[in-house]
Length: 115
Image (cartoon, rainbow, N blue to C red; front, side, top):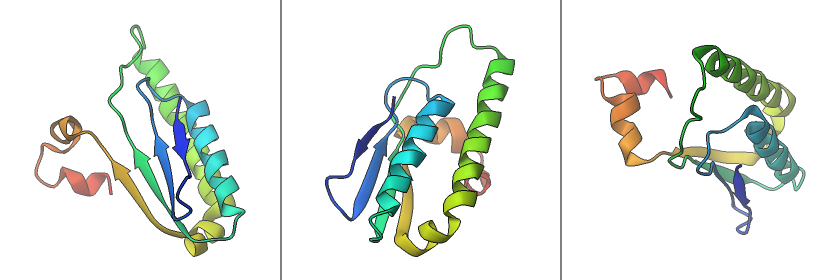
């Protein structure tokens, strides 16, 4: 379950928690983000990816279904809030554990695939 910190009006910080994210976690985070947009003030978003365990017994098909649902949730948010995020969000940063660097970005040029 994601945790949210909006104690500083200039930032919304989203912590991913120690469990594998589910589509509902992303729905909740985008709902929280949209609520902040209603303030009509500029702010940055920081997504802090925390180390987490993947559920045992999760099949490749389960993983593909989750990824497809994540894509739908993300695309819905982008479509519905494109204008307000472009006007109000001054930046977005994703912070990952250092150990993920080797996992995702060990090949030269692999970073370009994720940005």
